[in-house]
Each structure stands twice: as C-alpha cells, then as structure tokens.
Length: 336
Ligand SMILES: Cc1cc2nc3c(=O)[nH]c(=O)nc-3n(C[C@H](O)[C@H](O)[C@H](O)COP(=O)(O)OP(=O)(O)OC[C@H]3O[C@@H](n4cnc5c(N)ncnc54)[C@H](O)[C@@H]3O)c2cc1C
Image (tube, rainbow, N blue to C red; front, side, top):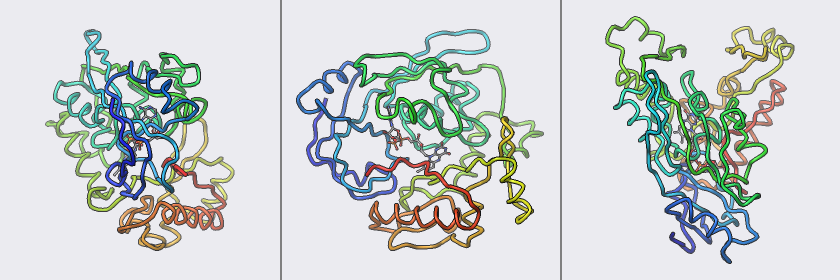
C-alpha cells in the first residue's frame, strides 16, 4: 500500500482539472482494504474510489481521502461449450480487458471498445455504447461493503443495472468498493450491430471481432474528443427519458426530434440534440466550453476550473429546462 500526501490530481482526471488530494492511497490487493479503512488515517471518513478519472469532475480539492485500486488479475473460472466465465480485478484498464476478449475470440464486449474506464468503475454506471451495456455480461460483482465492513458478492439481479445506472449509484452509493467483476462471455459468434452506424457491417462477409473493434474506434474518434488533447469526461449529461405525453408535446413543436422507444413505453431523447437545438455547440463560459462537434461533451479549453465546468453545466440545464421543460441530469460524478 502506498500513502501519498498532497497528490496532484491534474493527470488523474480526464477533464485535467487541477485539484489536490490531501491523502491519496494506492492499494495493491483486496486484503489491504479493511486494513486501510480501519487504520487511524481513515477511520470516520468516507473515502472516494478513483478509477481512471474519466467520469469525475473535481469542483474543489476533495476533502475525502482518495483510494486507487492497483490490482488487475484476470482469471478464467469456467469453460462451457458456448460461454466462459471470467473474473477480472478492479484495477485493470477496461480496454485492456476488451482487447484481451477480442484477441481470445470472446463475443460481447467488443462494442464497448475504447471506453476509458477501469474494470472496477464499469458496473457503477453500467457503461454502454453502440447498443451494448456491460451489465448484459456481468453475472456477479464482488465488493467490500464499507458500512457493513465485510466483503460481499452481488448477483446480476442485485446490481439493478439500468441505463447508465446501477445499485452502486443508488442504494450502495459511496458504500461499495468494487474489487472484482465476473463476466459470462459467449464463445460462439454473435455480433450486436443494432446501432445505426454499424448497420452497414451486416452484409460484410469479412465481419470479425477485429473489424468491429476497428469500426467502433473510427466512429468514436469522430464523435468524442481525445482527453489527452482536450480535457473532457465524455457525455456530460444522461439522455433524458420522458413520458409519451411529454414526448408528443415535444414532437408537435419539433417534428424532427430524434427519439428511441424504451421497453417500458417511455421515450429517450438525445441530450446532445436538445443542447444543439439551442445553438450551444462551441459556447464558452470562461475556460469551459461545449465541444464544437458534439454538444453533449463539455470541455476544458485549458486551465478551466471545476467550478467553471459546473457553472456551464448549470447554464445548459437551465436553458434546456426553459426551452423544452426537460431536466438534464449529469452523467458525470460531481465531487464538491
Ligand atoms: C472520451 C470519453 C469517452 C467516454 N465514453 C463512454 C461511453 O462510450 N460509454 C460510457 O458508459 N461511458 C463513457 N465515458 C465515461 C467513463 O469512461 C465511464 O463512466 C467509466 O466507467 C469511468 O471509469 P473510471 O475508471 O474513469 O472511473 P472514475 O471516473 O474514476 O470514477 C467514476 C465513478 O465510479 C466510482 N468508482 C470508480 N472505481 C470504483 C470502484 N472500484 N468501486 C466503487 N466505485 C468506483 C468513482 O468513485 C466515481 O463515482 C467516457 C469518458 C470519456 C472521457
């Protein structure tokens, strides 16, 4: 275990916001978690678990101790003819796992290529992209429950996965340190090409996991700014899900509004479309801005403070509310 005093977080969050963590711990294995939490350094505090910082906005210097998990082992637990069960530790980079799955001919995770996550953070907001979500493959999540002070295993059902949400964002928010996830990965070919931009691959006789990964990489490059060039945390807001009644009012005013029917009858509207309709692409608030190619992404134009990004997000929320009577909810975790 390492204890670093006054750790600069600027390179540990993809917004590249300057913030200092007074106490920063790096944990090398699961057993160190209870040791650290019961030590004099942490007793009576609620630490913040930091993955790769790609879904976090530091508004101030965090007053909570920060813990990073550095363990990253991958194991195959069971081999059946049409699926394998694998278990992966929280500290592994998400895309290292996806690349490994593609190299070893496992289907499923490929649509989630290039998401800048750690494995441990993936279940938190049930990461998703191109018609797939990690929750579709997770059978169990191993956690340390900081309230009950014990290790626990949650079944898929207990994780309550939903659109960019799970129990780790609701009932267990701040109470669960995810240590390992267990996945059931298909070994027989199955491609998810349901996303519109992937339809063209349907008739391609050369379709393979590598081709799909390459295609997704290309699409992502056109839609999302590279955080190493311009600080951002991907989509800042969740896409709002509204009632059919509210949708028909919206559609009568904007017949061209894009929308996706949800299984429960509600309707999902792209938040980026709403923001774009208001002409906010490229809008700036101090050093913070709306990305000019994708209205859903807020960016740090250089030296932006967390406060500036937060203020910009609130300006957008209030304009969207005023114009469409829709509440935008941040997808990014705001750490005050
Ligand atoms: C360019 C870009 C593109 C993106 N594209 C997508 C996308 O396509 N789809 C998508 O869903 N997301 C996307 N994101 C958002 C982000 O990658 C995901 O939310 C990711 O899961 C965050 O992982 P992280 O390790 O960076 O977590 P962090 O940002 O470090 O943490 C996020 C939250 O999870 C908590 N957390 C982290 N690790 C653990 C743990 N082990 N146990 C308990 N809690 C934990 C943190 O406390 C925090 O609340 C994108 C972000 C960027 C910058």
